[in-house]
Amino acid sequence: MQKLSVVIIAFNEEQNIRRCIESVLNIADEIIVLDSNSTDATKSICNEYDVRFENQEWLGYSEQKNYANNLSANNFVFSIDADEAVSPELEKSILDIKNTVKLGQAFIVKRLTNYCGKWIKHSGWYPDAKLRLWFKDEGKWEGDLHENVVFKNKIEEITLKGDLFHYSYHSINQHIAQFNKFTEIGAAEAFKKGKKSNWFIASYKSIWKFKRDYFFKLGFLDGYYGFIICSISAFATFTKYIKLKELHKNANK
Image: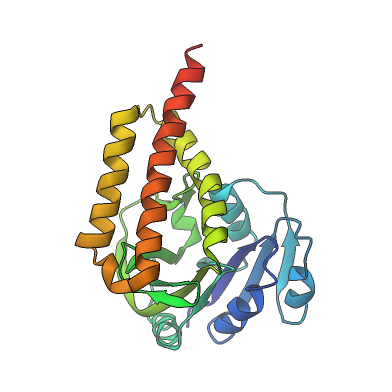
């Protein structure tokens, strides 16, 4: 059986970390929590379990995750966020692959998000496929916001049965506050890649984002919160492209 290191990055996650750790106890041969100097009860909760708890100043999404992976004793790693939890069906799938996994394979999980107490099964949020299990020597995280695992060589990607539960936003206010941070990072990432923006692009992209998620990706089936999610996502898209426009404007001064 292949030994598995479960790697979690955290910051002020007292609301989520216990659920996350308990969901991986049956699949993990090692659990590492890399914290970026939490000021709440995150550390004391982790100390209740057989967890390796380490601190590291925030390096950025990809670098923080790579740093955490490098702490692991095992080559086979499962990267999970503190606000996520393994479903019983996904737990079974992971236990099964520990008996059969081999080098050159990586595994994708489907993420199901809980928004203000409601499971969101449409709205462009499900299935939110994420590659999360792989041999760390074969690839590493890259990217500032929408980070992805980049591999040295071609690998076989396999989608596992079962969902990874994602407890995202507990209130609409939290969602609105968070998108300002994410659009800042997204605009900076687009700027680095040389992408351009103007009023037309910002308007077109945001309108299309709402139409796609609410109508074509069936956001209306998620009811009230589906409309809220699609509306905020559209406005976040508009905001990102306006911020990108401002970055180019300031760069040309």
